[in-house]
Length: 289
Image (cartoon, rainbow, N blue to C red; front, side, top):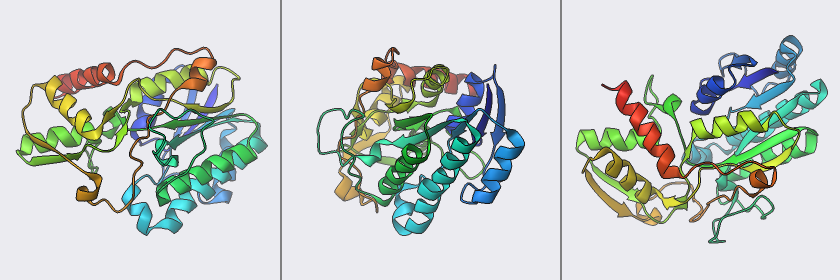
């Protein structure tokens, strides 16, 4: 399979590169392609002639999206539509990632793929608009909703703040008082596990919309507490509320995703999030010895 991997510097793309190694993969960074430029997208497709396109590019700084709505929709909606239309014209399978933030979190039980989206934030709205673009323009697509991603490619470097796990470990090392919201519940998801499952899914013709997360659920505070339990660190950690934390963008209070379509397609669930975290922390410790 000849795969065009867009957004190749991101943490999910880094694990995808590992699991797609047997394929002919052409990684493309943001510096090499601006997906908002339809002509540049077409030129790249004409040169690469892929039969599968995986897009991990997104404007995903949730709070920044509230103040930069035009950019959010340009990247997460219009840019995705450019890719979707061009993939359709090239006869290529299109793979795109969306988010649990397309839901309002009022259901209080895991969301399945057929539940009605109702985003609360500009970020969620722009990602939902991107979903519509994929579904409108593509016949052969895999649209993947996931949440709480962390992976080695998201480690703190070159100005990056790092993923949630890395941030918690850094704050603990600094001796900071750590306050984490306890009223937002989702599922932390390993990019390694997501990449491995996606690599198998795209070998099929079971096109459509999928939820894909690790198994289980927790609040962000419970996630932080489990990180410190597994690493045997005892920092100053305390729960707080979303209102007290005061983030600019509203978040769904409950956005756990049920991988119903994945199971229907014959794939087993991803492992529990605690097991995936344990492997990540083990690898993290080996790299820092």
